[in-house]
Image (cartoon, rainbow, N blue to C red; front, side, top):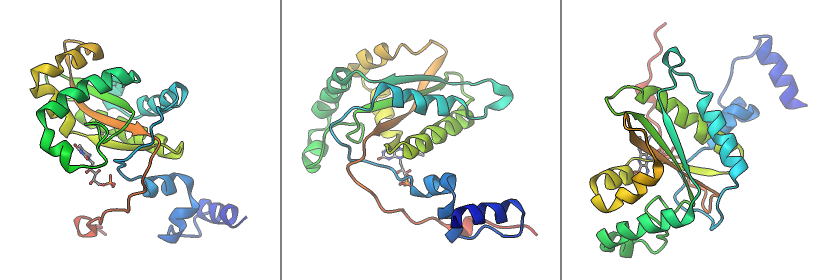
Length: 202
Ligand SMILES: Cc1cc2nc3c(=O)[nH]c(=O)nc-3n(C[C@H](O)[C@H](O)[C@H](O)COP(=O)(O)O)c2cc1C
């Protein structure tokens, strides 16, 4: 009831949005609750849920609706295990240091690989796509982590070619970033945000 009254007041413009009201609004609540998750349950995400997340992603805006992205959703657990073997061979110390290490993708059971044009461009669009997917995932009780580090490893390491080949990325696209996704096994605290970066010009 309180929520309904707040919504009506906001619609009528009689009430400014305050920090507390953020949590009365499901979209804002989802945005504020999303955190990068790096521990996941041993349970792959259902195909149907991944499809909903990706559909939310491709409904992101893009310049002139060019949709300059290619998306590959990895559900093949063996493929992840195989490429992770390469990572473990190359980074034994890093693996040994982390007692919770499951895999090189921050331990997630599924991956959403986002590719952008090989010649450059499309990064802004692809970023909007990614945030849509991470928020959709959050709203479905899933955790995510945007990953740049593992992409650098995959692209730099010849032994990972089999993984990239399986992604079947068109010649004119390149792997840009990966979203690790799964059922969260941790609830990280929010990291501080720097309000001083914002200025209101009145
Ligand atoms: C472009 C990009 C690349 C990132 N790469 C990694 C990564 O390789 N490994 C990782 O653990 N987190 C990575 N992150 C997650 C950030 O560390 C995280 O978003 C940031 O610390 C803020 O925390 P929060 O997402 O929980 O709010 C990346 C995030 C972005 C946007």
